[in-house]
Length: 195
Ligand code: GRF
Image (tube, rainbow, N blue to C red):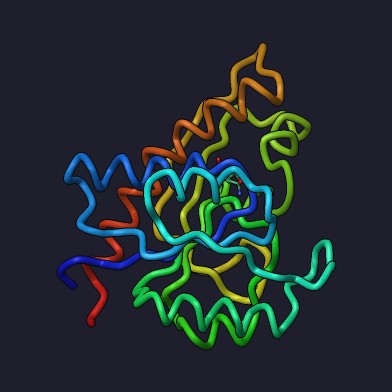
């Protein structure tokens, strides 16, 4: 596929979206971001997107804190389709995607997770790694299925856990790895897509 249109779903800061934009600017990723959607109206990712002139909108989850209601998933699928999105990238999106969004983008939703999956799925994977006492963790990009951080793995980068690491220092190095790996895997995966 020539130029891929990405749709980004995020709940937070948007540093992975920024890494994707940086890769596009550097010519390492032949893509554009068509739309950014967030379940949090005050998420920094929306502000960052707007500053870059990218369409940025809120997904209304009807007051649910964790659930991604079916109507909200349908609305998300509609907005992504309207924006001409080829590939959806979850970047710190904190809700579990299920049908009907998965059905609208089969094998076209990616996620980045701060562990070497299948180890440490779920929240605060860097803290889980420290508590387990492992000497190595890392980051994973995978295709999204209906599970939590399951789905076929597309790429991983290893990160050493240092003896004096705190949750914060480990999280910081994991994020740096995320910012390298995510754009690289997106570029590789997008090249395999047919229009
Ligand atoms: C990342 O560390 C990602 O692994 C996790 O949420 C964080 C999002 O950060 N799922 P950002 O919004 O991309 O800065």
